[in-house]
Image 1 (spheres, rainbow, N blue to C red):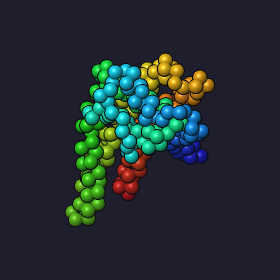
Image 2 (tube, one colour):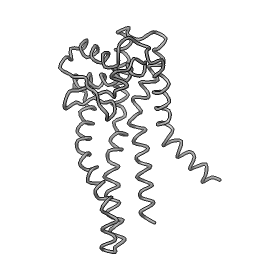
Image 3 (spheres, helix red, strand yellow):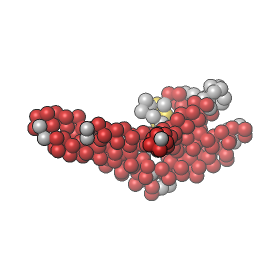
Image 4 (cartoon, rainbow, N blue to C red):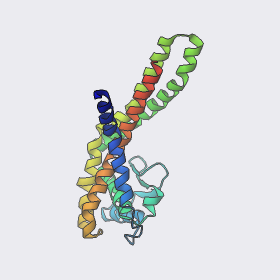
Length: 227
């Protein structure tokens, strides 16, 4: 019984944030015509208002994000072209990262370096995991297989840990950058401001929820390989 409760608590901790993020984002996508301007247009307006005309706004299929190397705010199609509260609020969050970059916000710079460092490590880890069973079959050395798998899992977990460590950067983009911009600009309906706060919290927790799920997958991989 205690084991079952522990498992339920673990699943709640791991999947709870992700479920909450998806629920919040989905809830405020309706009505779809809440605002005249789109998320992309709002992003462009906020960037221009902060003298960041050199930063572009583009569509992406890889999730909403700001690229500090290319100086681009990238938004998913439903945010870029959407008129919902979620679309415009998430766009403001990504502009918040652009403001961090423009002001030389140190945690963002640190995260950018960490992400660049862990990306090749993650690819290496995925390759090791794929190769481990074949190496084990050829060498018939279970210890070697486990060692390779451990190395692969650890390297893949590095990216998840980066997102966990840099959560304050996401919170700053939401509540110290995006929310003040939205309040000062008067672009949001006053009744939407409390809801925008929820969306900004969800935007800040997006990477955290993905990281928790990734860490659980890594633990599951490890359990399978040790059998």
